[in-house]
Image (cartoon, rainbow, N blue to C red):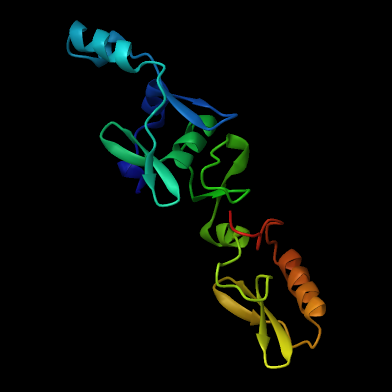
Length: 181
């Protein structure tokens, strides 16, 4: 979503409250000047103030609707806690897309987000970036959109060690390659 399409952060903070420890979002009490007449003002606050925002399932993530636009829940939580919209991708540090606690979210570039991926379901070796080719194991790593070949090894454990060393050298997150949740 382009920045021009985002709700103003000050308005967002007036409308929605966030429990940073759980990642839950709640409607705030709205002042009278936000409504054209007293009836809708009283009705809205009676019905909605203090209630949790409805989480619309959207793939593995959830979205919320605010001012007739949908926003990814994790981006709204991050924006409310940090009082600004994220500049890049929001990474769920532990890999659980439903865990929107502020402490589990970080604003990162696309490349950095890719350095905290779970292992793919179709992985056969049990370790990310290590594949079997004939009698040998070949570790590789993707960096800046390019695959780097890390050699060929008869011993699986040695191939895994080489891959882990490369992850450290290239600044991958310690959770990278974890089993899918």
